[in-house]
Amino acid sequence: MDLNNHTLLMVDTFNTLEIWQKLGTHQRAQLGNIQHVNDLLDLMDYIHEEWRRSANETSRLTNVNDKLNRQLGNYKIELEKVKGQNDILASKLVFANAKIGSLEGELLQYKQRFKIARDEFKNAALDIPNVVRNGKRSSSLGFLPGKRSKQLNDLDNLSEDDEYENAPPILHNRSISDTHIMAGEKEADQLNTQQSLEKCTATTTSTMDICRSPMVVYFPGWTKGRTLEQCSHNFVSINNLLSVVSTPFSYHCSICPRSLGIKRLKCKDCNMQIHENCKKDAPLPCVPMVKTPQSNNPKQRPRLADFCPDSQPRIPKEILRCVFAIERMYINNVGLYRVPGCDREVKELKEKFRKYEPKLEQLDSETVTTFIKKFLRDLREPLIPFSSFKEFYTAVSNKNNDQLRYAIETLPLPNRDTLAFLCAHWQKVAMHSSENQMPLENLAKVLGPTVVGTDSKLNHLQQPIVDSHCHSYHYLEASKQVEILYALLLLDHSYWTSFYNWQPNNPSMNNQVEGTPRGMATTIKRRAPIIN
Image 1: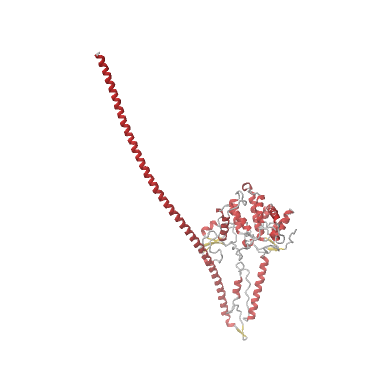
Image 2: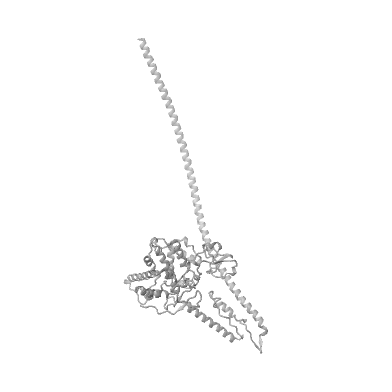
């Protein structure tokens, strides 16, 4: 009995110890969890503190950024003001350079006059011992005090183009009497008048082409027998500013808008003057420079001839530059001549052509083609004048290529040469129609109303169009214009190129006259125009 009790007591004791160990283990585990929780709370406090510090830093940086943005806006405003002032100063500089050029030109002219006057004074001094003969005073002088020298009058009457070629011979008067002086001056005036009439008869054409200009035969002009692609510049170095003839192109680079210094390059063929470092950007072909047409009436449109060189081929420089750029870079562009360009960029291109040679490779093809169309639309008359519409449409309606060629060849020279150059160009565009999607039919539809002038402008005052039929009339008129241009584009490509690429054995040039100088046009008697 006692043994059993002792055994039970031992078992209870061991159970109690085991429970006590479990309680100790549990107590120690509880103490460890509390420490872990404390660590987590400390970490959360640290993270919260860091977040608050980051928020403050973000707010500070945001304020700094706003301040910098305000300063940047102020700087941009100041930059625009400085640009405006710079543009004003640049325009003033251009005006000042132009004024300097004009004054230097006048200075050269006065130097020439003073040289002539000095030579006449020397001649007067040499003739003094022989002024008294048989009791009468005589002299061979053409210069008298109080009377203007005829040499100076002749110098004033000379134009820039014929100053050295068409100057009348100086008349030497034997007597100093007023009668002889007046007679000599009348003879000189008659000679000047006769030469002016001869010049006008040889070169003047009517704007409305009421009386059609005579047919002229083409001789190698400024191209000197080369093709347009072969006309390269012939630059020479110029160091003496006073040796340059004063023209609007003399003191400004033709490539960039900057003014020229004393050292420059000048093309002997086209008179283009550029900086030496601009030589690589000189555009081809080499085309004679033409002064920008100036009109006293701003509402009056310029003539095509105002933009053309004096010798053949008479094609405007602007057209040549744009066409060469299109054929070199843009001929495969989809919708060429159909997609319109930006009006603002077209106007800017027009202004650039007035001042210097623009870089067409920096423009879109739409801008260049739209400039060509606008250039043709802004002329006083289209390429095919209003008065020639009936003749062209009759030839096209009869499908008579001989009549059509005759109508082309009897156009005024600027119209004929420019039309030939553009038609050959549009034929090249149509050759790439698989890429640009502009066959001859599309080109005729897009360009016909621009190129072909109708007779409605001449007849609308005598035969006013009723409003109810106005739409159908203009539609019919436009279809005729398209039909004419399409017929022109169907002519042989070699036929068009023969007008501006001189070829000695070309059948279309077989009416040349011997003894005619190179670059001159010979008048040929032509038959009466075709009339319906």
